[in-house]
Image (cartoon, rainbow, N blue to C red; front, side):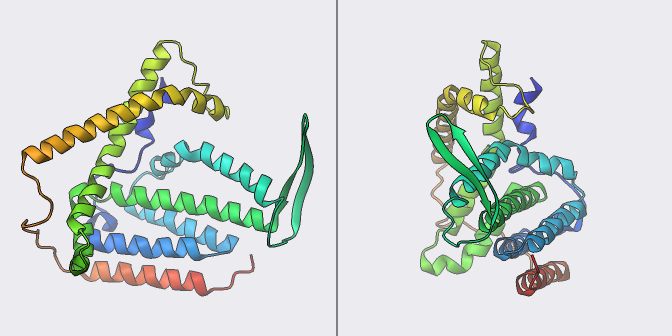
Length: 288
């Protein structure tokens, strides 16, 4: 039943205590620094730039003291999606490339009455590599943020960052509460999916063998699991709503706020380094 251990692969929404400087950083500064790094990740257009951004994210994981293998395991559930994304990019973007970029590889494919060419152009290759790197970076940064920050501190940080927009009627408290609840229930949904799949497997359902690229069969077998999973999620949401209403929760109106500390030199240095890295990565003309 090891192939059904989904809770081990969910790295978003869990907190691992530690003593690294990333753990000690103020959650508001951590969110801002990660957003600046994400700007660097999504704006660099070159292969070398994407590789440097990915190396920087791995360096942050290393500095946090968390096992790199544990964070990378959070990428495993989306690998089938990335495979489909790559194939569709080469099938459609390569054959119908509006930029007219150079063709790197072309081979005809025949599937009965359907005839088409599997084409890889410079533009399709670049967009595919960029997309994969950016997804990896976003998952690792999101996992690193939640693994080094308690959910309570994260929600208070989001509320504090949105406080200046209160005059524009932006419900900062409600947005922070929604994000905190979503992060909190990600591992719970993964455990529920694991329980349902184990129950289906014990009744003879075949989800395919792991590690042999049988994600199509596994995806097809997941369809009957989807309905009870959503029913369970909606039931949990309803129970949470009833519990909050029974405690007279009315949102952020009239509620006192926790006083947040000022940024120390650690937070300012982290923000400055993130900003310098983003500017340098976006302004440096890499050959590839």
